[in-house]
Each structure stands twice: as C-alpha cells, then as structure tokens.
Image (cartoon, rainbow, N blue to C red; front, top):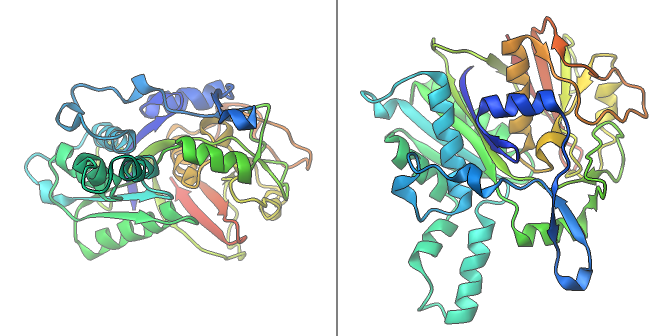
Length: 356
C-alpha cells in the first residue's frame, strides 16, 4: 500500500511542509493552560492554534463544525492536495477512514452540560450532531465531494493501526482505488484535567522518549494526520506500508531506523528498551507534537518524510541515559525502510513497517 499524499494539522501549523520544518527545527516549549483554581498550577499542552484551523475556502460550507471536525477536514483536504490527484470525475473511488482514541469528547461534554443546564428538550441539535463520532468523517466526505465507503474507528490502544489494516483491506478487495485514512484527537479541559491527575506531567515541557521509564513524563497534545493510500501509481509517492505485525519479537531483517512512539501515554515505557538496544539507530519525535493515543500517525508521517527525502531528522529531545544509538543530527542518509514501534498500557506491541 503506497502513501501518495499527507496532510497534517498540529501545534506548529498546518501542512506537510510545516511538519517537516518543525522536525528540522526541533523542540519548542509548549503553551501553558490554567487548571481549575483548586489545583493552583498550570499544565503544559501542545494546543493547535485557532488561526491554524481558519480557512474560509475549505471550511466555508461547514462553519458550524467543531474544532475536532475542522482539524480532520483540513488534514484530509491537504492530503488530497499534496497528492496532486484530482477526483472530480470519480468521487466513488475514494474511501474515508477516521481513527480517534476519544472521539469528539469536547463537544460530547458540552452537550451533556447543556442537558444539565437547559434540560433534554432544549439542547441544541447541532451540538448533538457534532457529538457523534462519525461527524468528522461525514464532514470530510461532504467537503471533498466523495461518495465512497466511510467509517470511523475509536479505540484506546491502536486506533491508527486498525485504520491502516482496514484501508489495506478495502484496497485489496477493490472497494475503492484510494483510501483517505488518518487520525484526529482534541485536548479539551476535561482531558487536561484527566492528564493532570493520571499522568506524570513533564513540568519542563519536554517529553523524554529515551528514558524507557516505568513512569514516563507526558505533555498532552492534539492534532490530525491523514494519508492518501493507494495500490496504483500516483504523481507523488512517499513510501509503502509493507507490514504491521502485532506482538511479534521475531526480526527477519533489521530496519535502517526505529521510530519509537514513546510519549508518556502508556504509563510504562520499559518495553521500548528491548527495541532500542538492538544497535539500530533510533528516533522519537513526540516532543514536537505532544502526547496522544494517536501519535503513531505523526510518527508514521515523520518516517514517510525521511524515506521520501532521504534525510534523517535529529531527535528534538536527546536525553539518552541508556546510551542507545540515537539520531542526533539532521543529515542526508540512505534510508530503505523504517519501523515505527508503539506499546500500549498493557505492553502489547505494534509495528508499522515503511519501505522506500
């Protein structure tokens, strides 16, 4: 399955070029948000700026959409634009798969608050419709004018991985010629409160992916990444997704680089050390975009960029107490394949294998 286009909306901007620039630039401090006064502290968060999701051209027909849907629509739109493919004459050839860990929870809690404040007979039907998990996928299909299959997946452990598996199935079965597959997650006040209570927050704003700690530090993030996948030819090709083994430690051939999804969300990152001590060069870019259960999509985008550009991007935070083979400099390199590794809170492992 080939990656023909990528769209990104994240804390430092919009578009694959902005994402590449951020990878080259490295770590920047997150913004701070005030927790309820009873906690007397601030929380570092990688928020998507409001001006990033303002586009009167793309979003003019969905002005009432919430932030969750707008981030997904813009990332999906940009993935199609990035590919250079025009679908005006065959809208049914494009399928859409949206993966999320929590769905539009900000809007869901707003709807519940409105029920408490005004009663269930007086709440806004618009807010209710946006609280449905499939709203973002529907908006993407509406804005792009596609008529292919559309589905939303929501899962805590490996939502992006399951979406990739489904996308490949659709392509293999001939359900569509292209699949727009991606993730979106939002960090609202409820999520910020949960993170502050349940996670070890990095007070200095730095996620440290290479400490392999049993109690790692996190910095909540949000954003959206979409990939246009196809089995056929396309004007632009980043890489191929060649496999996705789960819970397998068998290594037939080592990749040129491991990209570790360690971001503090799993609660225990000691499992990553088994991969890192292999001697293969390792990298991790979660300090650029923040901690989220769908961070694998961002790391997959970073891996696809490195393969396409034949450039290794330096790790944004290079604390390396275990002395692993860390990527410490941005420089040209011959890269044939990259494996993106993620562990969930149950120490289950999933690997996305990318190749040139």
